[in-house]
Image 1 (tube, rainbow, N blue to C red):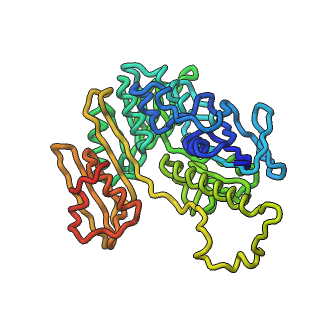
Image 2: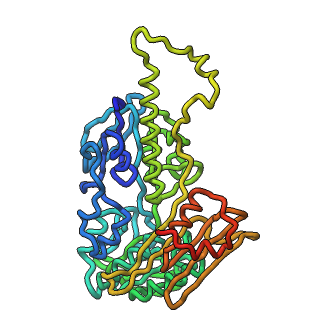
Image 3: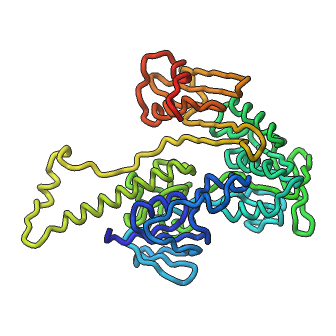
Length: 429
């Protein structure tokens, strides 16, 4: 491509785009781009850091370079090393930052010794350096990230307490029954779980954390505290450049921001009012944008005729029937499925597989099919609205997840077979 494309961000979305198109990729971290989904496995010792490296992009990544300013008029990106990079199209793939909760003992981004976020490979390596058998560790946050971190710390032999402010673990993805099964499994790993438990502050001595204070006055001794309270889109660069920003950087179906020369994908992007914050949508957005940019390059080339070549007048071309015009690539949203494996050989226990998608809590009038096998620690549930599958949860036995995911992602009309068929058919995972 002759268009100069600059991508800010060396995470999942940015690297995926750089694998499909020749771009200048600015990566803030010093490491080669890696799969963030597998960080808990690195922490647990299941994988070495180099194992989770992503496939190399078409062009070398500029590592350890942070974009600090966008000059939209000049179409340049200023970096923290003093260099400027010009662009024809700029893609923001800046990802997200960990949420630091408003606790006594935390002052902005300055964390006491022993307190760690869990978002980057450096976070993971720092935790591995301080966690050893018998260390008392408290994980704040019982969502997907917190459960993964607690499992990994337990695999290292730490004495782990997992605190969750909500009523149940992974409440965004799981219903009450599935969450209870998950809790039982996490506790079988040696993790002490507290739900409906609000953390109010941290105790310190000589700049190092010593305990976690709960709102009810209870105190948890801690040598290590992991903050797994969710993430927030990194929108500072876009906001400072005057782009339309809400929860994330607002984009349309062409993944364009309010500046037609700037796009956004991944955790920082907000499409149709939604920020996904998951790897699946980030990959789909990167693939969609690659098709969009490639299509625009082709259109631009075809619109520039060779000397002596006649073209249709613009008004005549615009009057052609829509069916004669090739459809332009677009991104219309993602249906994201969450998958997680807990336990495994490093924990000395049988692994527990989990998958969740769509709406696991039914509305009035929905049909629900639910199967539970306590002896096999297996749970399956799907929610059907009319003739469409709208959500489901599977724990322990994912044999049907392939069939269910395809029906849900494709928004397919379900067959007239009994609903039980949805949970008993082995469509592959």
